[in-house]
Length: 245
Ligand SMILES: *[C@@H]1O[C@H](CO)[C@@H](O)[C@H](O)[C@H]1NC(C)=O
Ligand SMILES: *[C@@H]1O[C@H](CO)[C@@H](O)[C@H](O)[C@H]1NC(C)=O
Image (cartoon, rainbow, N blue to C red):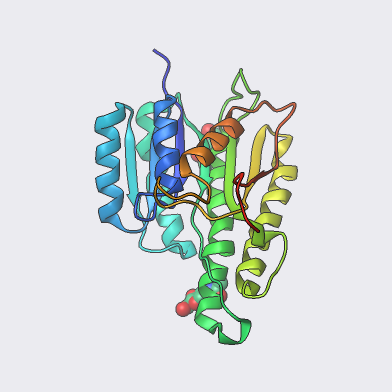
């Protein structure tokens, strides 16, 4: 039997949002799941449930923080653990963590600037680097012509600043620019880099009328991973039908 491919999802939060929805959908679609997150408790509980529910392999890796060295240390643990299923290899990675900050500029503290730079920008560089090095060693997938797909969860603020988004816009736009550069630099090698602009609030529970459902975004992510190299998306713009702004 062919080995299952792995997807790595970074950023699970309380295991109720987009990271969790993506893990569930990719598991249902035949991927093994590697999860990287802070908050060991939520991470391990979710991994255990998903393993039981889905029957795929689910590996969880807690990181103390997303500071470059902590992140690198956590990622160094990931790759050897996936080797049990090495033929499948790591085929997709989703960067789904960030620091959302909406505040007047003059009330923003240097620590918040530092947190934003670290999570929205610096950590995304380290994550990209480690994933790209893995993808480079993959064989080309016959269906898609790709060696791997790297997806960033972005925000509208990455394309334009507004009042109250000075730090958020500045740091998310750096991540967006990084993704565009990587898409161009690594595309030729068959590595697909995509940036998803989430143009609205992500729903926290099903009953909410407005906002994007995490499951719906996850479907769009799965589509990105399945895209073929002759026609793939760098930037995807997802907006709920009833958005009011
Ligand atoms: C944030 O502050 C820490 C020390 O508290 C420092 O090590 C790190 O380099 C800073 N990061 C950025 C992106 O400024
Ligand atoms: C990629 O493969 C080469 C050759 O086998 C190996 O030396 C290198 O360490 C591999 N890179 C990674 C990131 O595993």
